[in-house]
Image 1 (cartoon, rainbow, N blue to C red):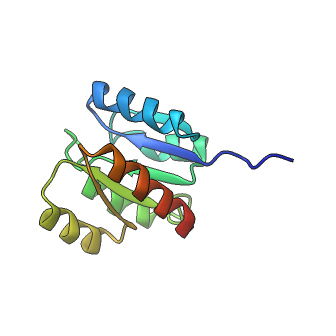
Image 2 (cartoon, one colour):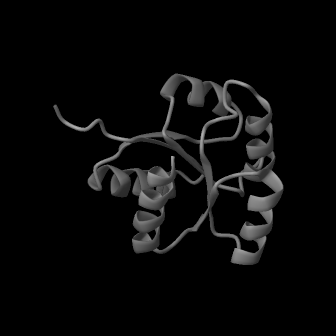
Image 3 (cartoon, rainbow, N blue to C red):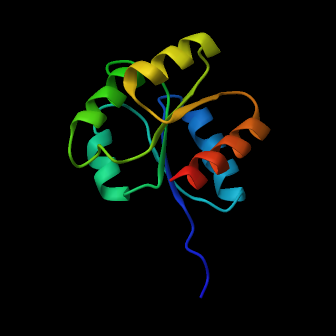
Length: 125
C-alpha cells in the first residue's frame, strides 16, 4: 500500500507566484490546490481538507493575518495548520505568527527554504 500524498492549499492573490509554487510543490510530490483570494477560503479549506495551508499575508480585501485569525475562530477550520508564506520581512512575520496563532512562516523567494519548511510543518502535524 502506498503512502497517501499530503495535500497543501496555497492561498495567494499573485497568480504567477501561485502557479510557480503549485508547480514546485507538485514536483516535490504533494497534492496541491490553489485559491486566489482571502474571501471564500473557508469553503476552499472545507472542500480540499488540506494537511497544510500556505497563506500569503498581503492580499487585497482580506489580508492573510486577518484571514488566519478568522479561520482560527471557526470550528470547521480551527484545526487546519496554517503557515504564512509571505514576502514581508521576518520581524513582521514572527510578530504575525504569534498574534494570529499560526504554525509559522516561510519567506517567499528561497525554494530550498520552502521545501525544507513545508516538510518540517507537515511532519509536525
